Every structure is written in structure tokens, then in C-alpha cells.
Length: 99
Image 1: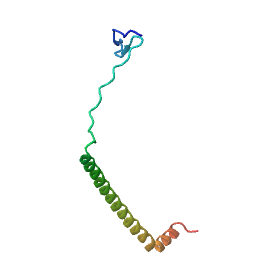
Image 2: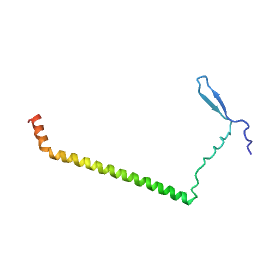
Image 3: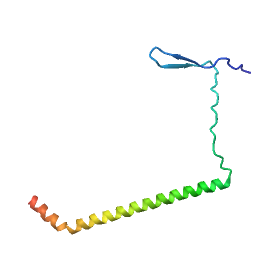
Image 4: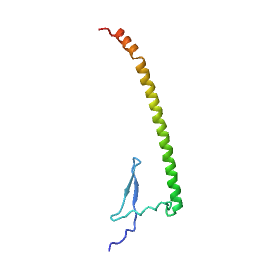
């Protein structure tokens, strides 16, 4: 059986300001403490959390749908303008670049 080390790590500051760590052979870092987590064992709290997530996703879906509808309307308006003034654009381009 291996004997536990009596000494921990040693930190040394170098002349340039950096810090170096020296550890003895076989040294094991202690385990960090666990983080407290909310227990989801309570079924009511799980349902409330699930309902909140569903509500946020529904709101996000609605906003994305409205953005897509606005994009469609703007795209249709530009297409209408392009088709309406197509002949004028061709006439102006033939004046600028005659063959």
C-alpha cells in the first residue's frame, strides 16, 4: 500500500512574474465540491418547466413566421416593381450601351 504524500503542491514565482507549480510524485488533486442542482423529482415543477419551454418556443415560432411573411411581402413588392418598369429599364440600357 502506497503512503499518502504529506506535502501538497508548491508554487514558485519566476523573475518574469509567471507562476510555476511543482507537485510531488503521486500527488492527487482533491475533487472539487459538487454544484447544487435543482432536483427535478417534483413532478409539478417539471410540468411547469415544460409548459414554460413550450410557451417560449411557440412565441419564437410566431415571431419567425411573422418575419417570413414580412420578407415575402417585401420580395413580392420588389418583383412587382421590377416587372412594372422592365420596359423602361431596357430602353434606358439601350440608350447607355448602343450596339
